[in-house]
Image 1 (cartoon, helix red, strand yellow):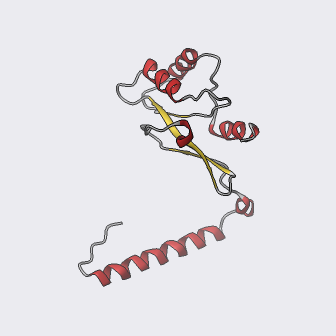
Image 2 (cartoon, helix red, strand yellow):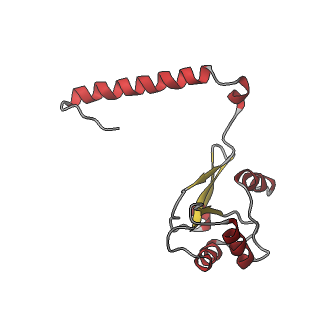
Image 3 (cartoon, helix red, strand yellow):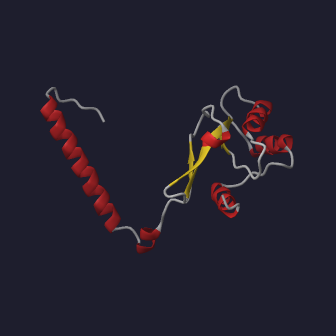
Length: 146
């Protein structure tokens, strides 16, 4: 948020009004949500869309929220300009720990990739890897009994 007032006290008031408006809007939005949505919760977080930071497996995968919400950081990115299948396979293998099961979040940029490209990556990786949707990913993690 840009603060455009010249005086500090004016900026404080402006920020307080912004926070009040945000909270009021959030409260009103909740009043019109279906009742079933009140029980929704976060089951997992897939973070770092885009280029992956260089992280170890343990840095990339951890649990928050009293040990109930897994966070999976992106360990490889497929599809940026200049990326190729071989480089993607290399990044995924480098991020894979020896212990199993292992859960790796790989971001795929859909603007430059086709389903055929994804099939090639999976073929290159071999039988030790499975592609799945985000909801399947979280479910597999839960069933693994972390």
